[in-house]
Image (cartoon, rainbow, N blue to C red; front, side):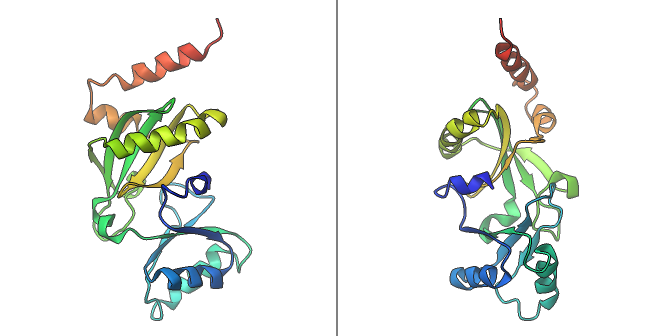
Length: 195
């Protein structure tokens, strides 16, 4: 939920356990929503709630299960439909600076690009906007003692912080074997050690 601290960088988002509030948020935006449980990872439990969901009562039932009948909050976010087939970009950020980034593309017939469910990873260009985003996150990450993180971005919008298992060094080393990513991480850890 730390992404909510950066409203200028995220897609329109609501966190609620109230199904009516989530559906009203959707009606006001007139678009599909991505709905995520707050206690999962790797794409588990994420659903796409179409804007015209009258014929998708099973999705509403799933939303009721996700919120445990309105007792457990979920994150609902505007679906960036135009970018969804391209997937999202993982930015590996060390001490506020981007080490590398790669594109995660979804498998056929899925909107999620998580590698754990069949997404693929590809080279990506780091943009000035990516650098600006990482710089904006740096004070918060530093204050929280988070030195290494994976930021997921799509269409220039921050989707997620990955802090407990940021993942991505292995994939980035495959794509960019000459970058010395692990060496940069080890060097940083050594600098953290008291003299």
